Length: 192
Image (cartoon, rainbow, N blue to C red; front, side):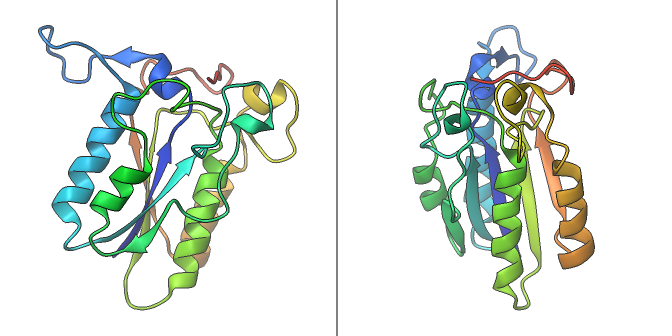
């Protein structure tokens, strides 16, 4: 299959730590650390059987500031879907020990997903497409939002986008949630 990994690189991924393994003897890790380990494990073990690509949201050029500079998503995937891409994907994302400003910005999940869906829809062929979204929760940076609304309002475009990808192009979206039980609710979004 052709699978795009759509990866949350927002500031909340390093702002909080969590007990990822339930063992008191091990230190807590950032959510980014957990995301990196998931990506490393999945791509390394399956790259001979799966064509992987990757999209970061926001991009590595995003800034930790209250402006649209925190919501940047590139115009093309960070790594195009292809065979044996584990090394390329890991090289394109910050290291698992990264902190801000390497991992920073808002949560433009809809923009990241739209990029992945568009790329998969143009690939055609016999390889089944899918998206794996790895995130810690609430999407923001919605189209048309400005000022504080850019970060304080949930991006309501996300669900219709995921629904349309499935109903129009038969692209399923699988979500890996990281430490989402403690994450803010729809009305309690933060960034950076």
